[in-house]
Amino acid sequence: MSDCIFCKIINGEIPSKKVMENDDFYAFYDINPVAKVHVLVVPKKHVANISAITDDNQKYVAGILPFIRDVVAKLGLADDGYRVIFNTGEKAGQTVFHMHAHILGGQELDWPN
Ligand code: AMP
Ligand code: ZN
Image: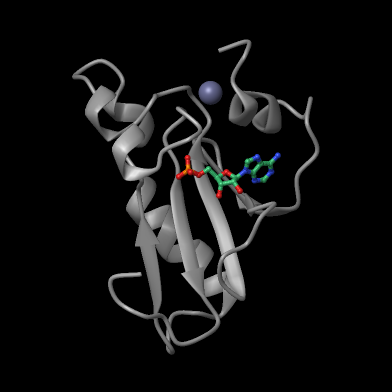
């Protein structure tokens, strides 16, 4: 999508600090971290959020959990623990309507905030 900030990050129009990528997903550091480690994972194809997954586009997002597992391993968070959050919809605080997982870690995390 031409006006989507995360599509622009994926195609390199907007710079980002990459963690890792594969054919389907890109992981990069959040510009405004809310934890010591705060990384975003996005599918390279534009899908607005979980509720926008369809029979047609699900193939672009289905592998996100194994990719998140690999990002977490690379970040060294797997042993201590981490949180994965998909803000979905305006009332849940989604501000960028390109599906993304927040990976938070590197510290003790309160629950639910
Ligand atoms: P959400 O509020 O769940 O939609 O999350 C959007 C996230 O994108 C926020 O945590 C922002 O800090 C982050 N963000 C926005 N613009 C950028 C950018 N250019 N580079 C990295 N992260 C960004
Ligand atoms: Zn997009």
